Amino acid sequence: MQDPVFSPIYLDCNATTPIEPAVREALLHYLTEEFGNEGSRTHEFGARAKQAVQRARDQVAAVVEAKRDEVIFTSGATESNNLAILGLREAARSAERMHVITSTLEHKAVLEPFEALEREGFSVTRLPVTAGGYVESKVLAEALRPETVLVSVMQANNETGVLQPLSEIAAVMDGHPAYLHTDAAQGFGKDLDTLRNPRIDMISVSGHKIFGPKGIGALIVRRRGYDRVPLKPLVFGGGQERGLRPGTLPVALIVALGVASEIAVHDHRNRHDRCSEIRAGAMKAFEQLNPKYSGDQSRVMPHVLNVAFEGLDSEALIVAIKDLVAISNGSACTSTSYTPSHVLKAMGMSDEEANACVRVSWCHQTPDVDWTTIAARIAAMR
Image (tube, rainbow, N blue to C red; front, top):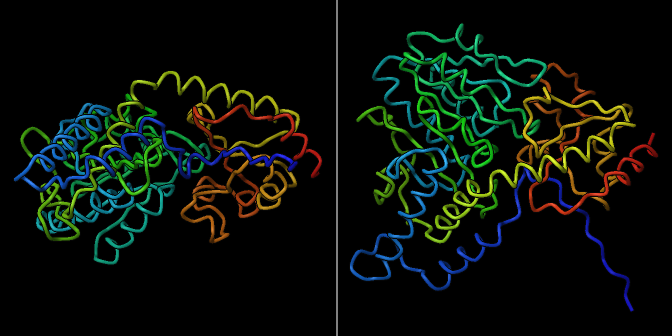
């Protein structure tokens, strides 16, 4: 008789989340049963697909109290970020408002489009952040200019879990014509009230961060009265999604994102409480290790800890406990580069301090974690 095989507990939910069972069922149904093309208008298969897509638009829009026609489906938050940022180029040039603002702790999917704008002659201001890992609204107020066309600040940082003061940022921008965009990949469906602020013009969404499948996301683009944000497409052909994101709509993925969005709102409180319970257990077990947590913990979402233990390198720590839990030392998009985190560096850490940090992130589906055993293993490394 073979010994049972034990798998480590997955604690890297900021990289991607396990799919919700009801979302999986919807996805499979529209992959195998309701497989019609939403653009086919001459038969019932297409009509049902169109109805399913429209229902998903409503579900995604409801999370932030937007309207159905303000939801543009994309392949994920990276594409949404690029469309929000680079899609404004033509309008900015025409209006001679070629100043843009972002922060130093953004995801590469925001930082790199801003670098592209800079190469094209735009003036870019990158706001510094505090040691607590957040942008101060007063710093933004000082950076705004009459010619500022766009401000992009993320909702929650993917490495530290620190929520940015978006409500304060929106208040600072009240009365200024610049558009406000937020990369909400980590916070959509988790921090609900913030994104319902109508001053936030554009919101990037990622399906696989809210227990949906990979390969689907959305850009929510709010109107100002009757005026739409003057975005231009990055690719062409077909005219789908108001011409901003052409191509055959992936109905099954869209339906899955819609279901995931609806469940996120319905189960918000239970999910929050479960994540808080896991967090409390981790922090209690780590007390004896004198942990150093990254970021202002009063601002951190309940499913994330970014932590370092004195004298331990993150790579060695990850290897030492890999049979117990699966964790990471930064963004999944840049972790293969083995360079110090630009987020932690922006918060004032040295290379050595940044390289000591690991990110632990969980969710409501995470089983009970034996934090005591993990802490003992870490203690034994010293």
